[in-house]
Image (cartoon, rainbow over all chains, first blue to last red):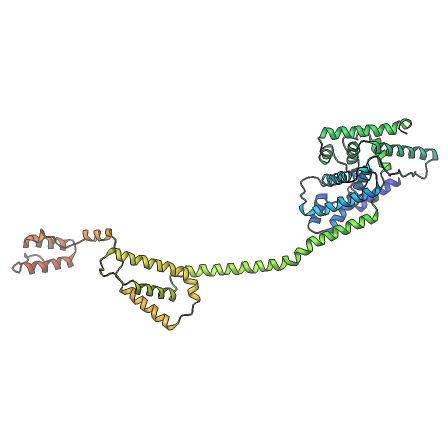
Length: 211
Length: 222
């Protein structure tokens, strides 16, 4: 319930347009991402603020789970938005803005990996262990363990599969868009996502084996 | 999420949503928004400082060029009406330098003169705007008048060979055969009269009487 209230509040504020909220009533007419970017191109800073607030959290989580380090994620995050800002003069709304944004983020992450070889298998993310107030201790513990297992399974996924899964979950990208961002064909992208989901499902369903 | 891959298993998506609550640090938000604002100011502020003066300068320059162009077109259109003293003076000088040919009937000389005059007229057209701005002194005026007088004294423009041939065809005088005897000559005079060329007929009659003083017109003729 608390989460729902938070989501409704975010939608009302016009700050969040994640695909998970697509069923929410169209209370506020929100300008298109490309339109906002074009407005920013013309010098409208408030348009950029709307665009930024719309995408900042999903892109942050995408980078955070991709590289596994908060500091590194923040550096890449800053680099991504710096590139978006600099690219505004040459921006043409030929593709969906989300695809463009996540392609920039993906490329920045690849550059970061090339610069810092040590990122692999050295994650510092810890799952947030918090439960609803009404839950019993047993249920809370069980849910916490499930989250921990999922987080662990996510971190142990191969980079390509984790990338494809996160693009699907955080960016809400279609298979074609994932293929475009990651530079592979559609079938490859689809199989990566499928493998990732299968592994994560196994981690959720079989707690004993996963943990 | 509503992608085609995980529609089949919303549990994974829901489980992921439960762990994915991270938000960007506020400090990072401020930093990025400040960077975006600064970039927008830099990109739109610098050109604006010189865009406006440049735009004004371009507008004024284009307007001036347009007005000048329109003025020139008007002057060229009225060049036939407007006398150009400088060009006339040039023409006079040229005329002095190249006197009219000795033989007035020399068609080639006439043609050359015509050509020269045409060139001068063309030059006058192109020089007209500049000439219009020149102040005309009395001396220049006299020279121009002299040049015009010289023009008048120049031989008539040469006639073309075709024109001369045509004129010859229309020659109304009686030929040598007709002038062989007074009767045939008078018949020619009568023919001219019948053709309505009374002047030529009278001239021929005078010539006939001078040649044949004893000749008397037959009665019934005017």
